[in-house]
Image 1 (spheres, rainbow, N blue to C red):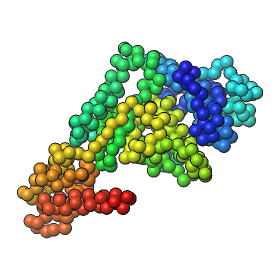
Image 2: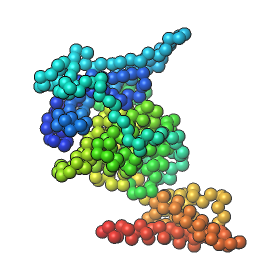
Image 3: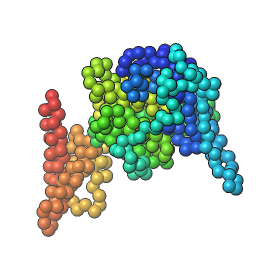
Image 4: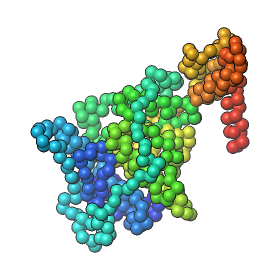
Length: 397
């Protein structure tokens, strides 16, 4: 327990956690390795209520060992009809007893009535049953961002592309508490390119991307949302995909201290589950939010980098307009990119994309030679979009 200087308390009940050796790993990324007997700290009250707020001890050390074992399996030859074996790892070979509990050695938690072999794996909610990673659709060269944001992205991405040098050659794996897991936080106004940037990073790494929104995680059934969170991390690990959480403030927000109903309790369990899964994840995860101030500090400490996405300046707006005006779109001679950049101050990239679509719709309602996108169409469309956003923001005040 060298990395846990102070025994953590349950975020829901406030009680000190108990040590046991029943933990298993479902997201190690290898179908050939089963893990059980990992030491964990758990809350007895949560367990009695059927909830899981456990925290694995020394996860980075066990993950490092499992990675070496996985590499050994991958590089070993199995000739003839000899198949690749399935390996079971028990991190509790001496069957240590749960701390402070009069129970048989190797018992699950402190309840003899729950045999480990009979404990079912959590089934993901139907919202995630068909969820699959996809190939990235953008590259870093396609991003139109300010210089500071681009520099921060390149610095963070370099940690990913240089992992062999950093962790193996320079042996930073020996001191990295989080293993090789890299977590990034993208924050800023809607439509400023956070999702596109995550897509581009996946492209650079040669990985697929698994995009998760809070609507896909949230379940109408109490207790199902944490299962969906576990399923999302497991799915990303299974495919080696970059995991991208949109609307991340919904799951990374501050944990509630005043629990008045079961829904409040479920929110805390979901956030604690996210912390646990993040600590055990060995891949790349990116969180994106428009409301980063709502993040719990426990999550902020786990981020390698926080990258701010700002509204584009005039020169960037000009480039974004140009990107969204395809050669096939008929437009009038008066369409001037400099004028559009000046006129669209305060617009995000997503606003400009919507404005082009709306302006093209205006032009499609005309006939003959008038069926061209004119400067007035684009200015009218962007004004319509920005005025609508402005009215909504003012009504919130």
